Length: 286
Image (cartoon, rainbow, N blue to C red; front, side, top):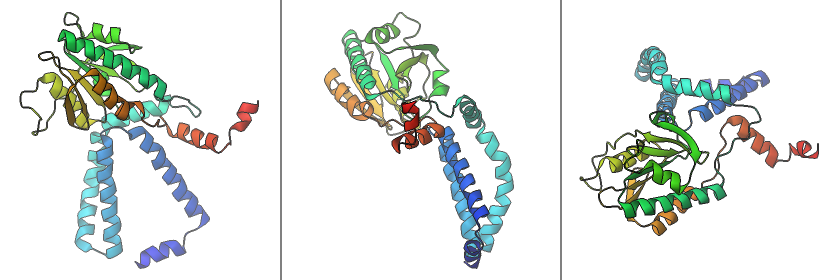
């Protein structure tokens, strides 16, 4: 406890600036790992740091020895575990601009997307054609998009019906709609659910894949059964089965249509805050 008082007594302007810069660094890094599986690992690091502080403040000898012994191993293990996330984070950092204006899909555009998806799901259900449509929210789905065929097309019911026509090469897989509201890929491979508490043990591969992607991300998935024509939706590892087009539209509007837009980079967040405070009004006057 004396060490804590010593820190506050010796806190200078230079030290305070140092702390602010480090905080900004971690704030920036949080944007580049947001929506990745690295977040869970980052929580573990926070726990380790908390244990270090606790051991120092309370003078816990055994805990301090355990932490000091473990840290050198973590220094080698963490870069290996984080390798995919570090690579994607550096790629995003290289693409990010100071005044970029990339925004997620507007609410009006989402309403149109929901309408097209519901129309496609209804017609797929009537025809008994299987379908698997993934709506990306905040979690990164790049690794699953790369497993499919790149499309980058507008979301229309006609395109979705064409993708899932049984005689096309793209029907056996998922169509992923990205944050921009465009069909990023088709025939993408999704992880199957690892849950032992499945709502139905007779679920097919499409339904298990729909549950699987909702367990590892915050994506919403619409699945149409090829055998029964029933429409289901998954979100957060849960499945709502036996929907019609009207109920599907109601649920999608509630969980996808009104999502609050989030900035894609820390620079965009800072720009939005400055705009809200009127600091960028000079740009509108020139």
